Length: 250
Image (cartoon, rainbow, N blue to C red):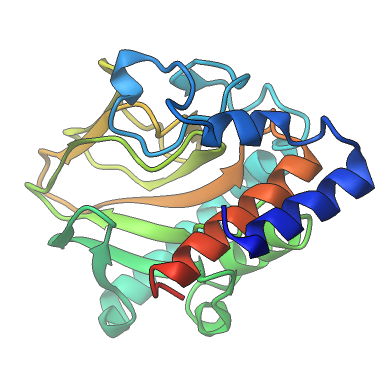
């Protein structure tokens, strides 16, 4: 722990109570916390969160407005995405995952590096508005991560991997889903239902593939895990921001 982290944690304890960030501190303790075997490659596992890979996207009152807003906006979101893909391909880029970069995995960002991507408002105005109003402005979006359209080209495979931690959770709106596409999380294979959302804990090993003949697009949004608390979220932002600063990844 650096002095900056210690000071940030002390301020949170002073505001919310001495026990308010105990789970974060346990996560950072030598040896960490117990984890599921299929979370072994994740960097951090905060104890006390549901050890469940797949989640019901309609089960959490905090997240329900985001889910309902995205699903209600699906038709317009798909039309705008189709127009961008046909007419403004330059706004898409190879998705630069922390483990890999693939030219058959394309991304259009709505939120990145702690803020909304304002340029996306002209390309995908419906998705931009919903994400900003229902996730970013309400602080349900995890500011440490991102929101983007994720397009897998035909034949693309995202190899099995774990993402960094379990204190945020990944919501997918199925925007354009051809035949032959699947996602597997913790060994359970599913497909997307166009216009509907999937929710899963991506600290569990997961993979995706497009074995069809057309691109597959989902809107991916990194939300705070609904079982985390406000003081924990503040502590986690302070922690990860300082680690990224020390690593020169600002």
